[in-house]
Image (cartoon, rainbow, N blue to C red; front, top):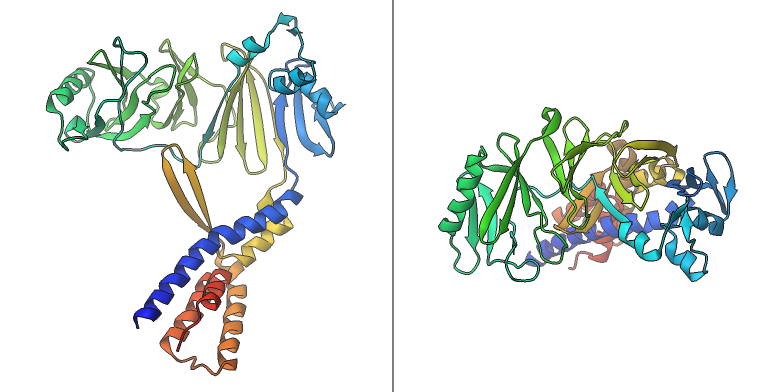
Length: 409
C-alpha cells in the first residue's frame, strides 16, 4: 500500500516537472517562426528604428532601409562597443563632443517586470550609513512594520530592539504614519552608490521613506500627487538622479528624484494591468521608456528634463495567436513557469480553456485503458482507476507519469 501511495506522489511530481519542461521545449522549437518587432531611437537621424519588419534589414519610420552596421552608426550610444572595435566611434554626435567615458557615465537601463508585482509586506535589513566607515554597513537586525509600529528584530538574540524601534517609531508618528504597513519596498544594501533606505505604504495609503544614518533615524513622508494610491514603488539605487518610479492606481507613472521632486511621465497608453514590461533607458541626450505587452510595444522619448519629445508604437505577431500557439492549447492542459528574481523564487501555473485540452486527454485515457487491458490488468482496481483519472485531469503530463511509474504486482 505504501509503495502505491509513493508511486502516486512520484507521478504528481512528474506532472509538475513535465508541465515546466515540455511546454518550454515546445515553445523553443516553434516560437522562432513567429516574427517579433522591436524599437529603438537614433540620436543621429532623430527617427525611430524598427527591428523585425523585414528580414536582413532595419527600417525607420520613413521607410528607409539600413544594414546592421549602418544601424549601429545611427545609435552610437547603445552600439559603442561595436563601433570602438571597428574604430568607428564618432568624436561628435549631433554636434556635441563625446567620449566613450562620457557615454558610459550617462547610459543606464532599468527593466520592470510588471507581472511580478513587487515586494510586499516583509522583513528587510536597513543598512547603516553616514559614519566614518566607508560606504554602508549591515546591522545585525531586520526591520518590519506591523500593527505595533516599526520594529527592529535582532537576529542574534531573537528579540525586538525596543530602544531602536522606539526611536524610529517616534519620528514616524510625528509625520503622521498609521501602522501597519501594507507594502514594503526597497533595496537597502551595501554595494550601491547611494542608500535610499526602505519605503513603505501605511494603512492610510501614505508613503514613507526610512533610512538609518549616523545611528539616528532619517524618516520622511512623501506627499503623493493627484491623490493617488500607490500600486508599486520600484527603487532605483544606481541612478544619479532617480530614487524610485511610482506606479499609481490612476495608471500614472511618477519619478521621485534625488532632490525630492515628483515628475509625472506623459505615457498616454500605459495601463498597469495590461502591459507586462516597463523598460527605462537613458543616454547623454534622452530618457527613453518602452512599454510592452503581447504583440505591441510603444517607445517614448523624453529630453533630460522628462519633457516628451516623440513616441511611436508598433505591433508584432503574438505567439498565442500563431498556429503553434493554438496547437499548444490543445496539447497541454496547463503550463507552469518559474522565475528567479532579486526577492526570491516564483512559480505560477496558467491553465488552458477546458474545451481545448479535454479531447486529447480523453484520447490518451482511452489509449492507457487499451494498454492496461492488453496486459491483462484488472482495470477496475482503484489504483488503475486513479491512473485513468490523472490522465484525464493532467493529459500528456499524467500519461507520461503513469508510463514511467507502472503499477508493480
